[in-house]
Length: 168
Image (cartoon, rainbow, N blue to C red):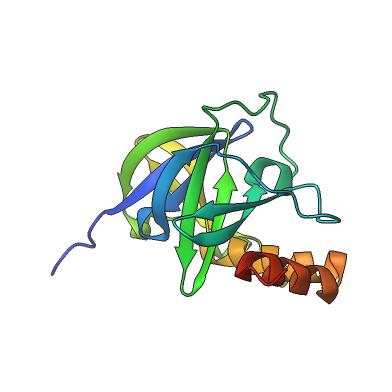
């Protein structure tokens, strides 16, 4: 019988909360770059950036989840460039703690996170002797796009799509 393989995760901090993200979703980590604002976007949407010729929506994950961050943005503020299927986004995080290995079979509380509201967490993982919320980046990207459309109306989303496609 073969044992499940450990997966690689990036451990991050959102406020004081430790989270882990599957490394397969992360294309690159960068430090803060010039962000172009999106008028009338929710406060956790910082704007968009140009990443290798592709315009990406930028969201502050701490602000999105209501976790206060005492740190102002600096040029050292970390960003994650992420991809889920055909969708890409950039996320500002408070801290990149490091790479860790964990086994998905050790995940706990998965049923508690599988609810009608579709929380953006898969469960809790034990990563390097610390308990971390397992962040579902695919779900986070889907939630951001749908929330942007519902809170701001479809015209803001189409304006953003026009902005990022260079049709403005």
